[in-house]
Length: 57
Image 1 (cartoon, rainbow, N blue to C red):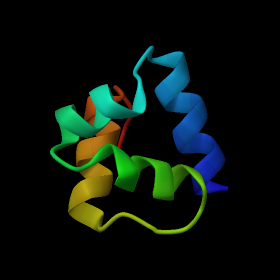
Image 2 (tube, helix red, strand yellow; image 1 turned 180 degrees about the vertical axis):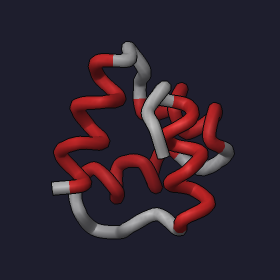
Image 3 (spheres, helix red, strand yellow; image 1 turned 120 degrees about the vertical axis):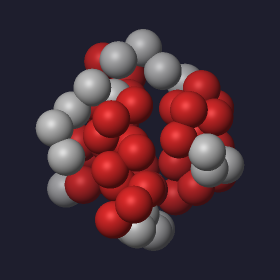
């Protein structure tokens, strides 16, 4: 569920995986892992993702 929501939010915000990763301070590979459900972000990274995508954390 998180994976799908992250991908939809990223695409609707117009970010590539690389652009979002740069904004958050992580690798694009980690964004890919989050979007494929292979990994979950830490709470600190989750807050950065939400802020970068303009979502409430």
